[in-house]
Image 1 (tube, one colour):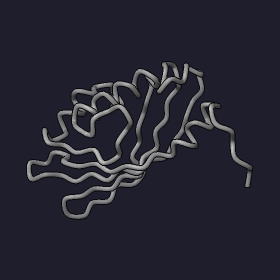
Image 2 (cartoon, rainbow, N blue to C red):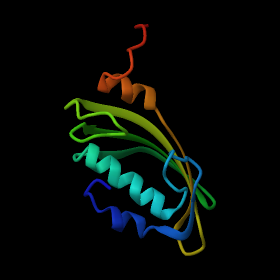
Image 3 (cartoon, one colour):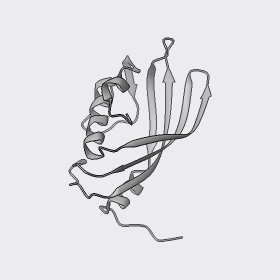
Image 4 (cartoon, rainbow, N blue to C red):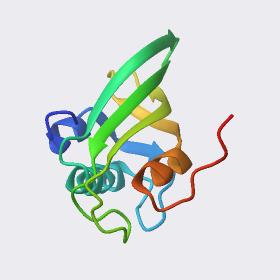
Length: 126
């Protein structure tokens, strides 16, 4: 993903992949995930994802990831702002016997991203 090789990333997913973090308008499948990352790379051409913690247990892996990028293209109807975002996310991936990702669950701090883009009001400071 960091290199923009969305098809290479999709090759790591099993053909019967299931996405549990559904995005409206996208199928919860391997092809839907491919479309999702194409959309995000178009909106954030310098998208970079850095795993900060990775935990493995059996056939599941949990990663705490920092995603950064500059908003240079339209994102879900939001015109480019030119602003940088720095967002935290959690990914849980279940692997099949061949080592491909079979299922994914995720949580993204979308409110923080929308605030950083200036399309949602910033919360009160603590």
